[in-house]
Length: 337
Image 1: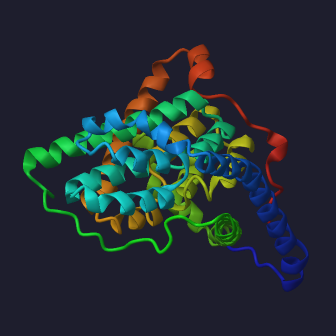
Image 2: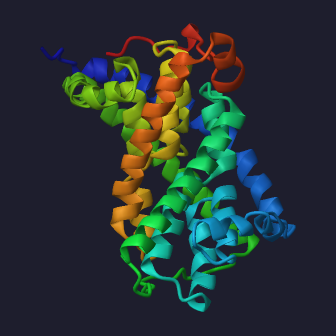
């Protein structure tokens, strides 16, 4: 049964409470994001990214890609998918890539991107940094190698890729870069505000309970408890970068156990922002079979294995190498109106 809220209660209690929650989440996210964005930009200006990418060029042979695609993947891991796409559209015309190769590259970009920021987010939410890094990179390579083998074995998607889009500016100056970052931060505020407002509405209408009930069988199969369902919904739909502040806040609230936070964040590390990011790489010419369906199935299988292996691990091993308790019960938000 719904609890009616009077206009006086909405403007005096609900709206200010929502505003404080939006401010807290955005402030936490910007505190993580801004130093990392600046550090990565300094690496770019110093010309260090090509040298770092040289370390990954031999790995491209394992997934059936040209060495030049190592720079695309490295740029994506250190910055974001947009930056990786810029490098891709610069180098792809000279490589005569097939649809299968672009699908392999795109799946790896979706698995491992924006690592400086997203690994910091998962670390703040309780996952050990080294484990999170290895999970993202090894899973990306494993999925890429698996897709490459399947496509070559079946002779699928071997036609040349058709580039349907190219970025307008491949090398923005410092002023344009600053404007782009400000636009990104403004978009984060808009998205977080819309999400928090939507979550309150869903709770008020009890739709959130329905979503939890529908997802419970799948999450239970992966070893994720009911308490972590909201955490999973936020990350899968919104992404780790935009939803990072929400994810950390949920982990620190103490409502979800460290083990369940770990399982949910492992899932989100491999499979998040499935709508926006998938649409992005489709503009590169990737096929949906790899960047969505194969990625989803692969992520579910990997998380099922991880959660069951974690159950067998000694608690000391879990705390030292896998996850830690970051809960701060006093950080839990007050009861909502």
